[in-house]
Image (cartoon, rainbow, N blue to C red; front, side, top):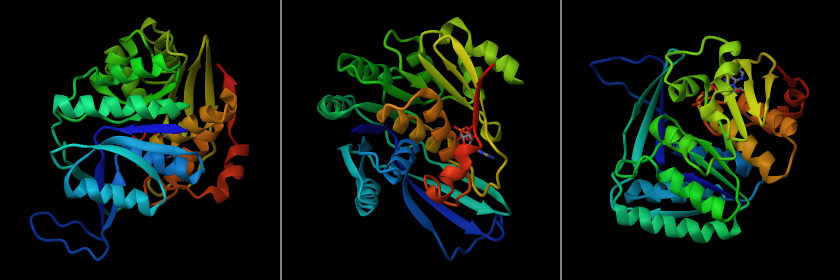
Length: 310
Ligand code: ATP
């Protein structure tokens, strides 16, 4: 089974508006509310693939209850730890083909809540074959909290797929126990290496060969409509994807992570799971709803993806 970890989930609210008026009221007929946060987006795509998973993380208050009800209604397994402060809302206002987001930073967690969660993970990991960690840490959690999860996974010999950013990503790549796979985008790689921008694939290739990243077995840098650049052991691969019509690319990185996790869970070879990951990212980009994919187009896209060494 796969264990996904979402430390700071959210109730994602989207308000589609024909026009967004500032400094006055906006009426909205349809408000979509779903269990969100990067790890829960990953979980939803894995569930659509019929891969067995348990969604773990921290929830609190009425919005925490909403998240559990939402996942239960979708038939998904979860094992959240309860915290005393309330889970957050994240609001996306969809207007004029644009998206304006208001992201609450969320609850502050206490040390004892983190200890309880860690103990729960220790039990969950007895059943786990792959662990997927996504998103930011809540306030109150130490920057190296994911390192502690990496240590637990190492003890139990379970591969970890990590998709986070900033200080917690830097802490994880510098840690002795590395994730098996990391999925940054180019901006996150630049942040890791302390450079302002990576301008092209050649610069990205050089960045992936830096000493800081050399001990992570697989790094998949997703490049939006340009596919991905991948470091696996000593080799670098480019993944080319076809041009597609896009509706809402938000969460495509999470769908991509779901494909990577699924492929590793199923013991697929690298090339196969890279293709799977790209297809799922593309399928997510074609949907209104984050974390939803229409698998009817899966085979068609899959056939058009090329993976080659550069
Ligand atoms: P997010 O944080 O919104 O989840 P990300 O930066 O982590 O995004 P992206 O690189 O934008 O991830 O997208 C992941 C994958 O999804 C891409 O590698 C690609 O396969 C697919 N994808 C995303 N945007 C597009 C697009 N505009 N056209 C085609 N495919 C896309």
